[in-house]
Length: 235
Ligand SMILES: Nc1nc2c(ncn2[C@@H]2O[C@H](COP(=O)(O)OP(=O)(O)OP(=O)(O)O)[C@@H](O)[C@H]2O)c(=O)[nH]1
Image (cartoon, rainbow, N blue to C red; front, side, top):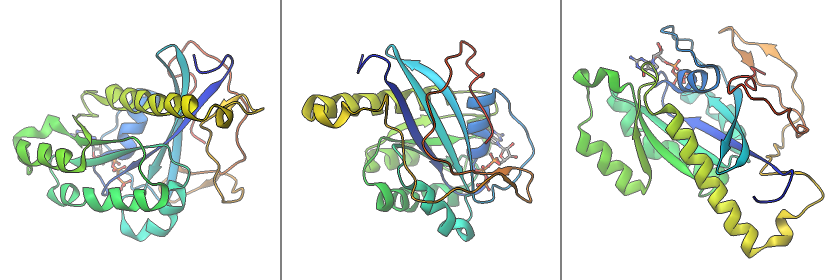
């Protein structure tokens, strides 16, 4: 254990071109659902889910950012404070594969080197693939990233992606705790909780029917729940 009664909260940003399946991945992971409809994300949404990793209770806050460049200015602000990142491209969209490095740079500029995974989504459409296996693997190697092939539709490898990131993050946190114990032993019972610099924006419905993110001060400890989806909420 890191420290008794300590809650670990991890802000994870999910990035990649439009329509690669970012919103679907987050919905699948947090709500256990998949929908064929495509609703472009306007700005940013987020959902959360609590999991247990190595006996630690971890709260994952999954930030769904818009894939379109027109929203870059908004989404960049939300990268701040991110502690882990999912880079997504689609099996049937070569441009999304080619854009992976630039997405990584955008995140790195804001938050530096954080635990990151590369995900090739929609592998249920492998027959129509526009990216060779070796290419995708080569990209992961060049970027030195763990690589997952996933299908949000078929619920393949989605849990694994987030479990890996949580483990990786905890590993780093433990290293830091060992090296600089005074940093972690604060008066707060939360660690890894992000701070955004933006001010409060209350819930606003966007044109796509999604709720636009509300930025609030750090939350208090969440209630413990046995239901894996019980802690998910659309804010
Ligand atoms: N076949 C298949 N379709 C998928 C999969 N994941 C997502 N989709 C579909 O791909 C489309 C786009 O998915 P979204 O989750 O909205 O994509 P996004 O990356 O959030 O898009 P933006 O909000 O524009 O950034 C939707 O029609 C989904 O149903 C998958 O694993 N397989």
